[in-house]
Image 1 (cartoon, helix red, strand yellow):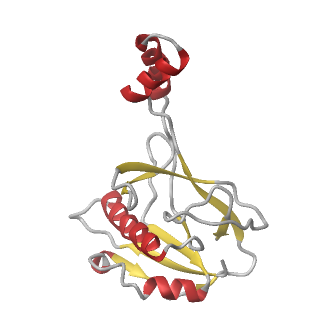
Image 2 (cartoon, one colour):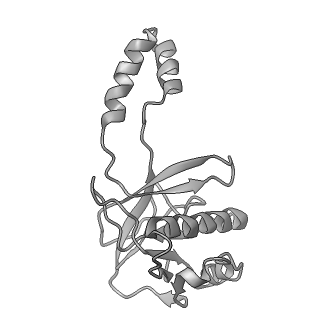
Image 3 (cartoon, one colour):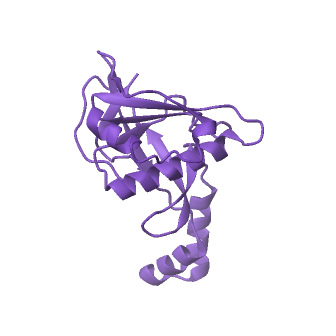
Length: 189
């Protein structure tokens, strides 16, 4: 991961930032899926987390090798977003950059069907299971997220994204078609 591309959203009074980031990230997911890419990662340099201010922000950074980033950009996956974005050239990661893990975080939100399955698995009443799941659902999720349409399942869901703590050294690994990894890091600067 020695190169990167910065994609910044242009302010637009007609479209909220979260909507534009959602559209951009959905397009990126489709491109990564079509490429079957497991060697391209993402980060969100201006993300915020917390109950009141959880957002991925207006800046998406793509990480990879120069050749692979060129291949991705050659797919013209930004069609329909060009008026809303400012895209850098493929750039070298600055010397001395730290490294960070950017991963998907899944939460058990306590849906009715989950409560029913839990009751059946643990031989308890559905009412007891709903009570257990109500406590889980009441938990406040502080991570930024994007609404995404899965390319493989066609399901729409909230994709919660967690940025780990910056570290001096990198960790190798593969990335999902969302540009996220449970263990690999991307440069952070």
